[in-house]
Image (cartoon, rainbow, N blue to C red; front, side, top):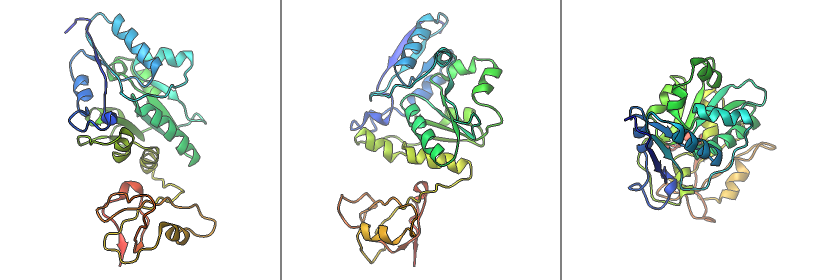
Length: 289
């Protein structure tokens, strides 16, 4: 397979939305990455898309797969050096404010903007992270070891990868001390924003997972409530007034109906004497007797 063939794929993830799991790619991007001599590209915006096309056209010794999203993606600001480094498959898109990152967040495609927003949320928690955009695994692998380590330093072992696809190929990059937010099941039929939230592709979840890697907890409580095995039924407003101490940050509340699904807006949430739990630790529900 040394022919210059360019394959163009779109609708690349669970971001498809209501078409459901039969139409939502999960393992396909990973499969393409495992094809020998195939260069895969999953760009995050128009600049990376342009560079992926240029690299695919210029390549004369093999095929390339260009993988695009369905949804609109935010434009990312770069300088000339960063644009040049797109050709290397991965580069530092946003450095930690103090130049001393405690962790590295790596993302591709539509999840790059999520990583950028999580970087800001982590900074608000006093945690500095580097964001790496890695549109092409194969091009990163082809770089000198010195370049790879300049982007993902061996000394920074706390690495979090984000991609709306199968996670297997990512563990090479995050290592034994890292974590991956990805897909371990097929998708679901829902508006794409709700599907992404359901599978944990949110700023809050990325922030929590990064902090967990560093052994930190969020300063703002996030409380999950259910009415399973619950007798009393005050309103959410009444509950919110009881939980935080005077002057403390207000917890975020979520209402659940009997089936464990979010309750309709305006409905009361029943609760026992519940213990606050982190968003990523929703199961099993904990309730004091």
